[in-house]
Image (cartoon, rainbow, N blue to C red; front, side):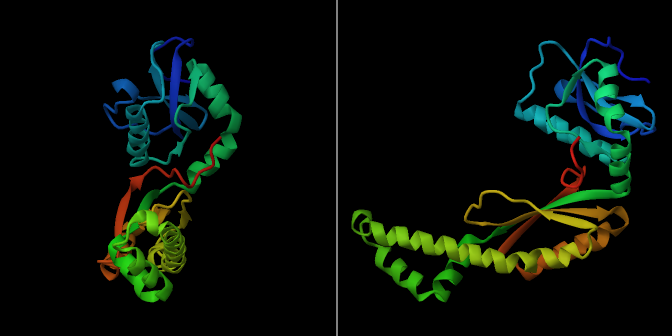
Length: 252
């Protein structure tokens, strides 16, 4: 086993797992600008950084460094990301707790994402346009909107509450109808996709992750561009990637 030039009592931050023969990008900085190296054991390698005793994990810049390391490694080799904040004491523990504990499982995960990358799509409504559609489609919403437009808040409280409820429900119906329109043509060019759940803001249509074969990136990009053109003025699309396959591996 090879790894950091540090004692086995040193705290190691663990970003993820890759194959033991992976060559990490030269000069890759980790958390706090510290070096990133591999702790190897069998066919696997833990991607680690040695931390000082004073280092505390949880800041935004550390989360950003965590993702940047994983994304950089994913450009050259399969990688299984670990949860932000994963730490062990000593290099031997990195092997024992992470690599030895789940060799077969980790190897299977790495093979499943070999030659593939994740792309994440953020789809947002042009809110004013969709609100106009909602008002035009629903006479009750149109009437409540008219009643409350210029009236004092204290005289139209019930009407405003009802209007808010109806608009929120209408947005949800729009999402149910529009998600397949946005994701369907893009998903055809991916190995797998996953729709992320979470609280809806008024303009949020969908957030989805796609696992894409590297050799099909061109057609995947063209499909996303085609959807963006078709929905221009109504929906904004933002495609992020390639990144490590955060949504398509099971954490250990």
